[in-house]
Image 1 (tube, rainbow, N blue to C red):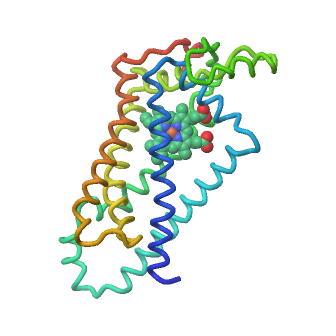
Image 2 (image 1 turned 135 degrees about the vertical axis):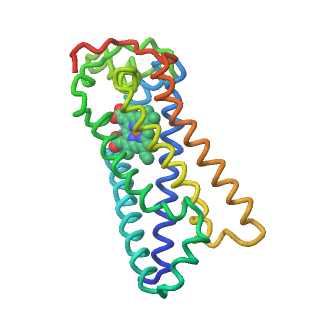
Length: 248
Ligand code: HEM
């Protein structure tokens, strides 16, 4: 495959992943509304019809794999193409974010694996599975309660309390790991979004500075949006509505 082809794959898979990250951040910010909001939302996602949840998971997995494989291929290709003396100069010209893409990317991969074990599989704290709550019907999707009644259920998984407990003072080191990972995500997006515009042929001279500013603004919004949740849980701004029973 040509180097341009690889750059297109990096850009398109990156675009899908950025779309997911922004959607996930907006979804998570419902934590700052009534707990019903995020709990109803999580219930809805978990119970999407036609196996749609697995379709989305598969698309994300394919994009992550494509993004990593093409990144490795491009690094190898660049190393081969570049004469030894040029390395130092290219290194000096590239920004800090661009030079560290492979490291921020690798740590983000570790973060994602940990994160899925933490909140989706819940095998790091199995007691998170026990957190359940009754919806008061405050959110936007009031019919969830009718659906629950129809299937003989009264409670949903209390995702709200799971997240607050997960980031609470007892697990402060988990919050620190998340906040550092979000800072790395911010760096990764800053350079990644600019490169994406370049690879898709959108970053001409007139738009270069503007697009770089858009990338920087997006990366900062993503950092604040995500990091606000562990910070609010650590400082007691967010409080769980269901206590954690088992000791860990
Ligand atoms: C403070 C920041 C974050 C919080 C509070 C958070 C919260 C959550 C929660 C609660 C779930 C599980 C939903 C459920 O199963 O009910 C989840 C799943 C997930 N999150 Fe996050 N998340 C955060 C940051 C991120 C970031 C930065 C990424 C990616 C770079 C990410 C990627 C994912 C993925 C891939 C899943 C699995 C989705 C699935 O297959 O079910 N999250 N997150």
